[in-house]
Image (cartoon, rainbow, N blue to C red; front, side, top):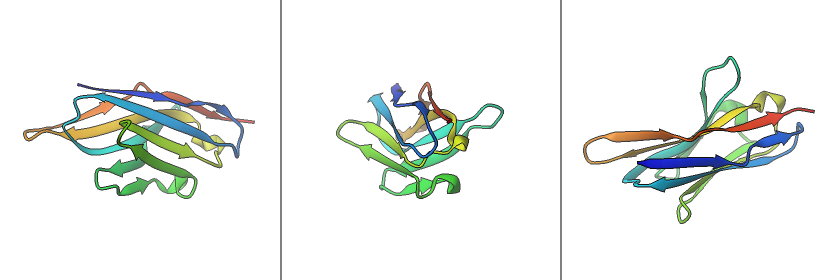
Length: 119
C-alpha cells in the first residue's frame, strides 16, 4: 500500500503563489510517474502536471510557464509550485502516483487540498 498526503492549499489573491506538497509513504516498487490533478465544481478531474521516473515533465497548456512540478526523491515528496495564480486555477488539487511490480501496475490518490484564488 502507498499513502499520499497533500498539503499547502489555501486562499490567495490573483497573481500570488502557492506551493503544494505531497508526501508519499509505503511500498513503492518501481515508480512510473507522479503528478497533480485538479477538479473544480461541475468539472471533470484534469491532469495539471506530471513528472516521470526519467525526470521528464508534462504540463497542461493552461499552466505552462506558471506552474513547476518537482520531486525530492530523498524525501519521497512531490511539489507543485504555482505562480501567477488565476481565479480559474481554483479547484481541489489531488496528488497521484503510479508504480509497477513485475506483474501489474498500481495507482494511488491523495485526499485532495483546496486551492482558492479570489480577490
